[in-house]
Image (cartoon, rainbow, N blue to C red; front, side):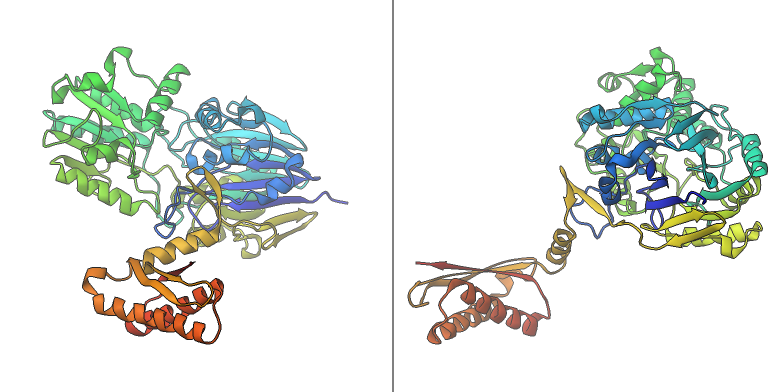
Length: 553
């Protein structure tokens, strides 16, 4: 009897971020990526959004390993939270593991894992599965596609990729090996869908360098501040090289920027002369045209280096007309408003701002339609599942797969929580096979209840009203109050008549209840809430949260 293989999706299908799925063979599990997502505007107070790890917690003893395709937060950022519940070795490139190590040390979970580096083309056995790590180009160095050999055949996962013919480091996607896999036979292919709506090919990362050089020439008398993802070492490399060529010193600002560039220099993946690097404190002493600051904050994070500079609260950098700020990144979905606010603040400071909307200072790290079709043509899978994208991206990618000759009945559009089951000749989707809701992180709390989020939305949209009244415990007679305190419903100074009517409604409700012998505190609270809610709805058509406080003497 054929051994069944399951592919279980915990995140990344129907959204940008939270990328995480599992391969399950003979009761053993390999976790592939473990990413986070940034919160949307309708998630007040939420810092991060994680996959639901319920399935993995319930099967913690069955997890043989965690495979990381590359070092972006939407693929590795939730590792610290997962390792709080399970213990397993982690496989990835030395750079990716170096990025992950710092997060794991901060989460104090390094004792629950072993970091196992893998190289281009290397194969490792993880439980009943063999994983082959195939180099692909992306916006972070040393990204992998991975071919998993299972009892049901090869399951091929592209990871995030593009087919960059002129990568900054010369490490190209191994198309020869991909073609060999296609001839060998791939049972199931999972492919990055982020740019499935974008026609043509994605520009090479090396195309950004000349644009940056031109900016240094055009604004040769000004100080430069360039914001980028701290993981985007090829972008940082090009900016640093252009700055040095223009006779400038480079200062790195932001904790993750300093850590990542330092680590990458140590392992030989980031090259800049030591003489050209200065501390940010030294930059203040140099003429504007002798400095280039490379910092974090391209996504408008409130406490990032660029955001603090924009509002003149950074300890070492104050921006003004002598500065050019280059935002060398696109806003991740959900961050658009934050990025726009930072750009506005930068303009208010007097600085010149250059971003992707005004100059080609950023290119995507994801394959566009022509590259996606080329990948399908190389691998020629029997079955196809689009992954890594919002639902519309998955649909568009499915259409591309059909154009490339894959029958529609062999293309599976899945969502978080679904499982693809391969058993013999049969491949099918089990919908909602595992829990896959959002897990919210608020401060140090990583299990924020959805009900709390609902309350926050309600408070943000409708406000709240507190009514306070003191009664005699034996009779229910009102001694003081009712007093009404409100926030976000009406402005008290401008609505005294409405507030007086509200006080009267509560007073009448409590006195009426007392006259009928209802004097216990809980019932008096209920009467006060209903009376006040009825009046608020009639007079304002609003539904603020009502908090009755009945005190006894």
